[in-house]
Length: 259
Image (cartoon, rainbow, N blue to C red; front, side):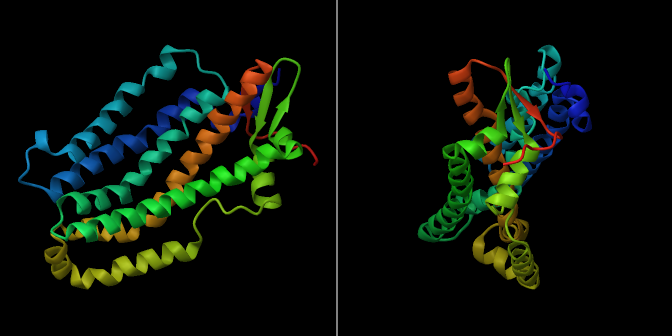
């Protein structure tokens, strides 16, 4: 078996990675609660389901903190992936303002529905790109076996091979183009001088409108990486485990094979 503690030394351990990653849902949960309360300040917490969900995210992050120390976590993909999936909560920064606008704004129902539907379609299409791309890799056995190398008693997922296949061979863009971030930022900042008028028109504080305009590329980025994490650390290892009955480990630094 490979000396993964040395090979993956830069990541320290899956326990350390998971602990650090919980900072994101911890902060985002409080942020979600604050946004929901700000959008409906007169609504009691018992009726504000968005605020309750935000507190729930924070609570889950706190409860999850000791889990990797109670159980024996090694370098298997299911443990490594557990540190990647909390990235999904980073999308709260942009999704929650949209949900608050949809739930609490004074806009007509069709406008709110169109706003949420547009965002949902963008997210679906972006995440679907990851599913399609990795399905292409899965169907090409040469590429797939370069990502998941089978050895006598275990299988290794190579992060460097993944990077080579996705970025160099398939030319797949995993992050929205920089122009998307620039355009979103410009729209948000150009809306700032009209903050009072926009807030009155929409019926929510301007911070919700500002974040909804600014953070769409961030939503795509976080949810795209979460989709990738689910595919490479859970879906495909599950298929491999079913066929080979071997554990699948993560190798983050070994040089990828030639292919």
